Image (tube, rainbow, N blue to C red; front, top):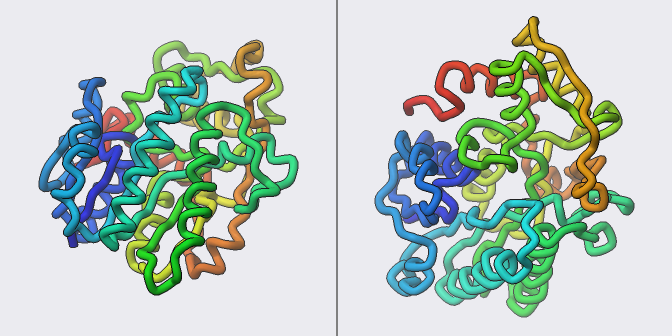
Length: 319
């Protein structure tokens, strides 16, 4: 099988390539942007055929018309990015071009959407228009592409259409996120705060801020489920289905550093209007599609991640 993974040097993308390697796939072309050269560390232990810059890839698309599937994980994932043109060019326009190429060449297409499409989630977290109201330009870029997918695929009959799957990632955590800076998971930040400063900083009221945290191996497994079930298409939530507090996360990290303390800090004013204080994936559509695997508990996932942070500096071990 010939596979393309955009964003393959990124967090979820590199974990996905690792998961594909573990299942025997290595005819993989990785598409990414290594302007942040530190991202190369995410590629060191992966098996892949080729690497190509994301802009060169778009110009050379027709060379890849015999590939079987595109895992489109590449995007600007910064929830605080304010340049709307940059965000839409990267996350919307680029994605549209890839989708059209995939459909025209009967290439299956699995892409990364986001729970940011739901905003505050006042109408729940179900994959339907009534629940969607993004709060920032990142969420809007994903929302816009999801709706483009809905409109475009409605024009094709089931027989004519290759697989198109959108996965709305909730708060994914795990190895290979060292390059993400402020956008790395709070677990990553809590670990380094505890190890270096002996103090974990949490926003005031963090026991009331609850998110759906999903271990990255589970997110990869959902992708691979759809690879194994190419007849299934649609937009699906990719979360654990549980909401846990940031305070609990801090306590789980603190348990590995008994001498550390947890210290509340003021909530940043620049996040007040765009911060999701609660998320919880509705898994009905995913379960109805046939995905029955239980998700890793927060306690187990955090323990595994902390071990990798301590033993592998937060990177994946050798295959």
